[in-house]
Image (cartoon, rainbow, N blue to C red; front, side, top):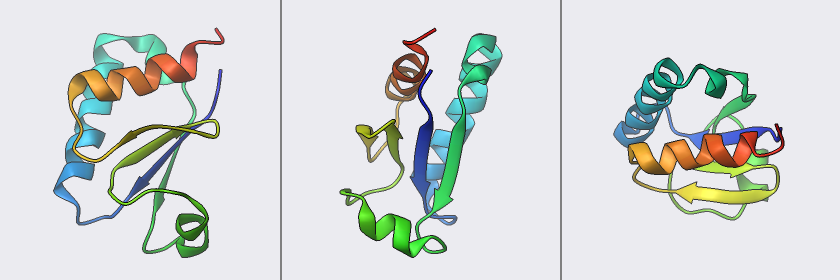
Length: 88
């Protein structure tokens, strides 16, 4: 299993949508709850944000790979979980 890093901004409506989709998906697929997800606000963790290559939030990294950036959909967020759990 690989760790997930989610870059957000606390006032971003797309980030709030992604977080809600993550909860919905964990209810539908309890195994997704096994994924270790670190949520980092780019306005707080500026050094981390500056070290990464992205323009839009939310952005998801699985391991060192950027898996999704920008407006989330249920399918795109589910893909993040699937990428993270591929090693199970």
